[in-house]
Length: 257
Image (cartoon, rainbow, N blue to C red):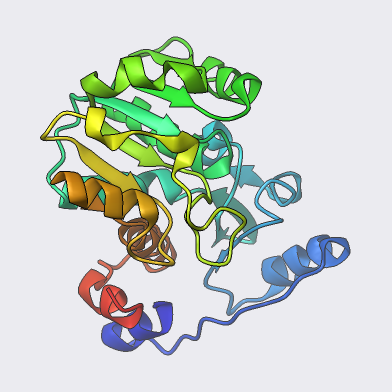
């Protein structure tokens, strides 16, 4: 995706995958900091939180989400950013979603936190539900105050909220190909209770049609898969690294979108 983007922009840059064991993370960060040709990097599991104290600064987005997925060199310093929330919102915008609707987010991990951060900034009323009710409560509580409400639900409360939800987001790995629950629905959610104009957004992108997406389409609901967020968070990273407008269509084509 990034290699295709660099080519389209005429940049003599490469994007490489680095397998960094946890015990070598600090050393790798120092190598980035001292490399004059370093343009930037993405950070993925299991380093998104562990890298934060190794950096010179983190953005407000990264601090609020509690994770870094993008590294930016600035005059010998390393800045940590998080483009997941922005990528999620750009995909929503592209889908033409009405942000004033009630949003129900399933999950309480890192992806859910990025989604809630984005929706909270957008001004949506957000409800969070997860198998771990304490985790859902903690996530909602971390966004208390300073804007529209973020509340948590128990798994058994879903049925009472779904009829008012204009947006349903699966921010778990349920439905992921090769995962432990690849044929399941997150929290056994009943999409038939959603309004007819609701959007069902599954952050899973392998497969493109998850059990949740299939159930929503059978109901005649609008759907969005996780490839859109993958592309847009990458595009936002590229924009931060280069200061250039990312060629989103090229990036999407490179990942089969």
